[in-house]
Image (cartoon, rainbow, N blue to C red):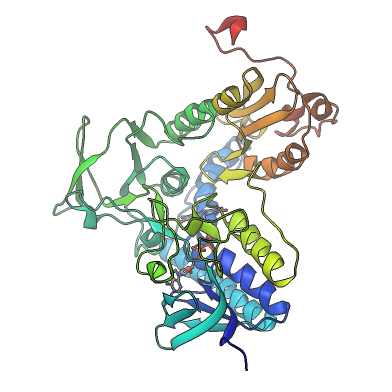
Length: 460
Ligand code: FAD
């Protein structure tokens, strides 16, 4: 008789949980996965995937503008929000179904309902009752943070609701300066919505390279987004015609919709982790070691709930490393260094490695290479839209430690740059790579002149 009902209980069928559950089940383990919402998790249901569809939908406005310069007539183009949302939802349902089938084909069992730990080996699942398991994996992700103290806070939506607005608003105020705020600002502005981005910090995208931050804020304004920095909401009030946004130190304004994109918090509330003695950080994240093991010997956690790098491919790799270690006898950790990332703003950003400021802190002396130029595709467009490419090189070893691109296809380009950087490429090796012409990416391998910001002289 087995001591427990299952070898592994996974809480959460998102990116990390599904990967771990499938691999464990394929190894022959008896696996149960609990999901309280829809299989696929944030990425598939209310994150990366629907967001990217919205980015695609909104980019057409800019494509139509570009097309005019090439001799096309595109008068009368219009956009049907409900039709787009219906198509998007159909595709999301199809993808969620694939996740369910993949779990089933691997031999894992799935239960719909909210799970809660009773003790280190017992989980209570809504509608199913108590289940025991030898090992437990917490993969419950994160959820949007709301400033609950703000008067009128309940009038605002978050990214979760933005995917299901019954109609396209005429105007939106988005609060936040992170990647989700920028991506939705680009989406709504592209779809013709009067868009204002409000951020309390001195610039958007804290933690990114400063040249990238300044460049994207400028480009967003060029595309018609009002970017209000150094300010934040003091209240939201319902009016007959919309929502009144009150701010610190700038004039109030009215909008149809207000969206908070003010960060996400690990989803550990009400999970019963205290019943098992699982240690949490101050922000509620599950504390784990390099093998994603928690403070309790038979409980692990992967993905956003651990608040390491909150991206889908990272959650997947952490889930995979856990399964390889525990079910295949291959101790495996995931290396969180040199993880490339994209911001699907308009224009988009690709970034891997350190910002110039972080590189200076870590290495002391760095060489910087930077170019700003007009993308060839926009040669026939009026306006001044520019791309940015930047390399940060450790002066002593000549290794490239940061690569940042803003412009068309930046997310595609950065994936390839990340391979070379993960392998420790030096600037000389990078430069020995022959360019692909005419592309934006070739600018990265033809950067020869060291960049010295105006006013800093050679001391920089
Ligand atoms: P999740 O995918 O969030 O899955 C957790 C699952 O657990 C959920 O399905 C939840 O319903 C379930 N759950 C929670 N508690 C319980 C419980 N008690 N019982 C049962 N089930 C429970 N990342 C990228 O890499 N690229 C992007 O472009 C990108 N865009 C994003 C855009 C948005 C708007 C958002 C919000 C996120 C985006 N992300 C992106 C981040 C990415 O979605 C997450 O990093 C990833 O989904 C984390 O996976 P996870 O397995 O940790 O958690």
